[in-house]
Structure formats: C-alpha cells, structure tokens
Length: 71
Ligand SMILES: [Zn+2]
Image (tube, rainbow, N blue to C red; front, side, top):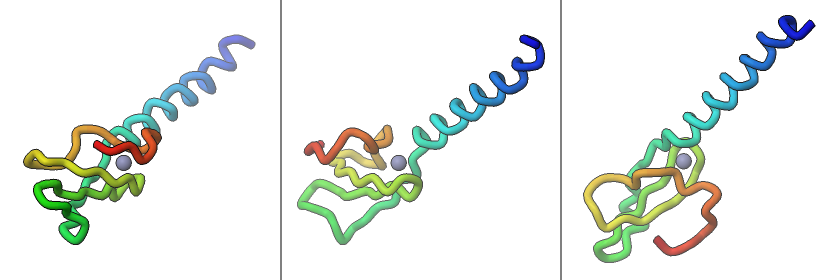
C-alpha cells in the first residue's frame, strides 16, 4: 500500500514546487504614474505586489509576504 501512495506524494511535491516557482517568477510591470523622484514603481502582474527600485530594471524577487516595508 506504500507503493500506492507514492504517486500521490510525488504529485503533491510537484504541485508545491510548481506553485513556489509561480510565486517567485513575478512579472513586473513599470507603473510610471507611481514614480517618486528617482524611484520607479513596479507592479507584479502575477501576485499584485508593488515595489520601488532605483536601479534599472524590475526588482529581483517577489515582494508578496514581506508586508509594506519601505524598500
Ligand atoms: Zn509577484
């Protein structure tokens, strides 16, 4: 019966890995209307997180779950 449970366990692990990858792979969109001086506002199209960055390009990681901390 252990062998019978293996496909279910593998499926759950694969689903969790896929979900984590989906969260990590944020799709940042520049929101120029929210710019603050040199800080450019980006909004994640995947999870709705918002982030500011002073560098070129979007943030490296998803900000979801980090709260509304400044930078
Ligand atoms: Zn995101």
